[in-house]
Length: 386
Length: 157
Image (cartoon, rainbow over all chains, first blue to last red; front, side, top):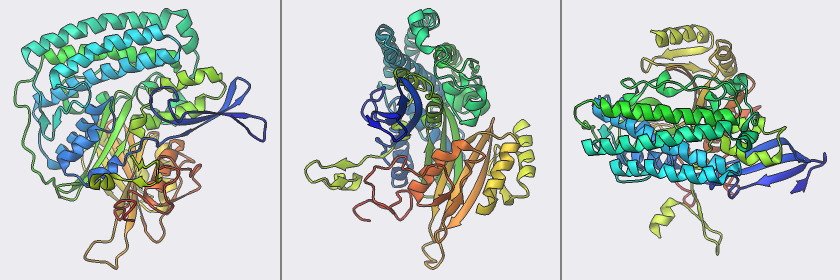
């Protein structure tokens, strides 16, 4: 802790484990218990994935984008595949697009439940943390049943998907969803009625509508401030034209509203999963796409669990993309912390941090490996040689 | 269609600042803008209630291999999204004078995009509120810009 010339103290939080198990560095200026200023330093898990895509062919690049985030991996590969398919000018079968959406929604369920646990933990409510993570295993099992993996499902190929849904899998998913829906009703009751919990969330970190727009916030953080913006309804992609989503908003703009919006989104995802399973279009799972993708530029926006994910993909007609730009939703939400942390108690900071559901791996996409003995910094090429 | 109308009306708004327009697809409008007109164009977008700058994409366009004497450019793409519509302001600057004006005066959320652009492409963003490093490590060498095409790894320079 250091003292500044004007008598404030700077409390550093992070870089290791600031609120959740990912690195980010925050500096909060405090006067007594009250935070009067906040700043953020990111980049601790920056891995150079945008640059890495330029040296890989289209299929390899899709696998690489899936590794931008360990939580919402499927949505990254989906966005990249959709952008590539736009450039190639191919029409992906409706069944494949519906399965993409099905897995996206299962992924959203797992992501929101993961967040619920982390946020409850930061609020000192570890019972809810344990319960939500126990129940989250149900959706992890469903994802494993469909794709063979708990994370990094590799469900996409350029031109469609790899996995079909069998009648047995359909029954398994429906059963799992029924259990999760019942549990989510319980969570909704807890976060809206438990006084020890609402004492930590009501009126905390409030971001009014106008500020949410001005700061360019995204996803549930934005919708909890009353802004009805969701790529799934604004610009439906993949199977969302066939299976429309009801947009969830709340007007309070505080931490409590962010809990309510995310839990309501769980219910909307359950509804959507059921609807897709009952009305899965017949047809092929994929269409052939050439190795070389015609020159051009494509933009693909998708709704990741944390908000709008933006992909810009450029081709020069070769076997590699010539530029891939990725803007993840977490990046848009930092401003809501640095702007709305001041005025709150220092003890509220972990929960305000967790409230936006930040994902550091998404922001930061580069790795350098440092040799502790020589201090030499290596990149991917050196590691390959070793 | 609503999206088409929105793009047509924003095209009219941008007319005084744009050198040319292009419609790459039904939901997109690209407007080529000179660096000196960028701030005015962003202000016009904000006045027309296009309040969401989704991101800034940087592109490095080196001189073509068969024209070694030609000059490379850095292009910045300011993507504004509204509903389904995407309006992009495309600004290109030469290597010899890689300077963009900051648009944070009218669009405060641009600060992270501008910091990323400076770090990754080695451009100057004049009057940007913060030019501290955003994602690269503290000990990253000065003057090395990883998203330039000429960058192939630290040890090879």
